[in-house]
Image (cartoon, rainbow, N blue to C red; front, side):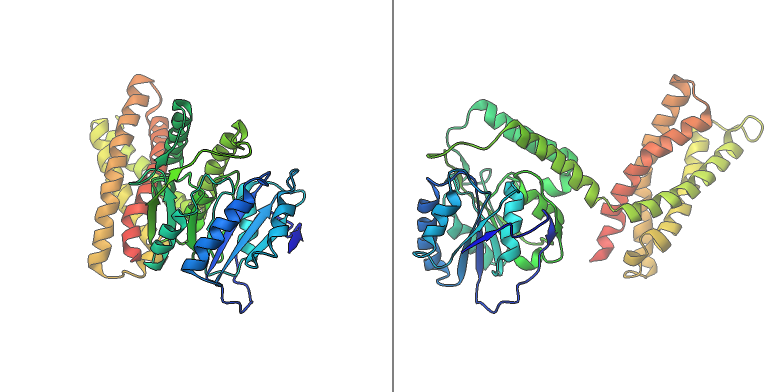
Length: 391
């Protein structure tokens, strides 16, 4: 079976196929110039899968029109291995999009991916499958847990790998931090966790996309030792690192709750006016002439009360409606105040720095400080003050 140019776009919503085939597992094998490895891999995978889920699995090779005719070699294997399907893509390349292509035609309840170069030990699939059977939504093969590791990596390669992970933790901490090996390209995931998710991967790191956009509740990791390639050439280039950074930034912005942030910002502006008015009434030489720091603390607390009431009633209304009691509302207010208090400390430090050190106008200094702290307040409140009331 070969399907040329199956899809016309690199993204798409996953949907359950209408087929009545009793398929439990669909394992995708993205390939490019892997003709020397593909026969051995298919043989090993078939032997393993016939033991754990006989006749209830499919192997889907998605080949990017390899010059070494990997797709042709794979196609010849379909007679010997009926569960094997082959997709030949023309005019489109990329590991992550190849995986999406395979998932879009897959029929399995469980979707998976494994590299074709034999650097992912096929035997680890047994451990991944065991975690799924325990109830995990996502089972990841990791080099960074007990039983995991790399074979003969150079110091430079280890440094680059760890550096890429650290960069990911900075840009996408809530996504990258969920697993010990976010660079892994070897995992199983429940299909239901990806239904309706608009997957838009870039480069090689499809797991990051799944973690970022999928509905993953229970996550498990199993150790594996990354093997050195025996046949063919590595496809890791400088471009892959550039694509990785691009992917992180794009995912960061796409996951940012823009509409909610805009409401939060509008409420914040109302608080700015209250803050400015009371700062003037309390600190200006023509009014009460209180010390700047004391005036700022009082003005900010009044603004915090204003902002909480509006955010609870509007910005996070869908969440607060689920927890309508006075006790729950007070709990949210206390959390909101704690987060904003930390922001206030930062605000006061910035205000004094801009006013006393840079000699800016007190109101301009205050406005700039508020702008810096707004992002802090939104993100922390989203994660703490209202998040806990969703359960």
